[in-house]
Image 1 (cartoon, rainbow, N blue to C red):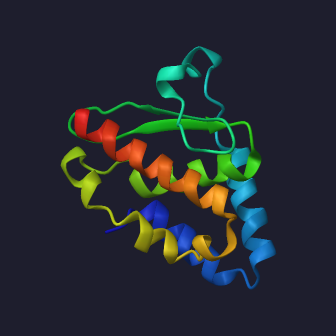
Image 2 (spheres, rainbow, N blue to C red):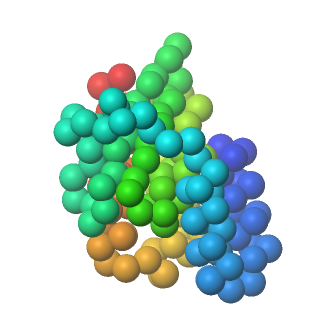
Image 3 (cartoon, one colour):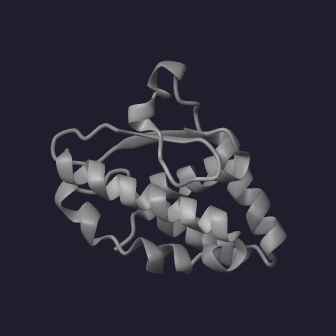
Length: 135
């Protein structure tokens, strides 16, 4: 159960032959993402458990989950962009049903991220699930 935006990322990753190209694509996705306003970079929006600083802000509207995020590390900004493609626009009552591990596994991310980055990615997914459940 993935969004069209996430399916497009999967297709791009399938097209890119090696992990270095994929890594650069993730960084480019992070660069293309609009920055989060400093006023939203507060302790309440900070994701704990990430090696980098990461902020996620949920903005549910009309029963649909929307969020924005940012990080001080380019690769992590790219991971936030990928999570945006995976979750943004999903009905609130379906966010918990998204199998993030399986979907992200389709990109091969878990095989190529450091243990700290993988833990941070899991922390971001957990934060998304928690804020969507209260949204």
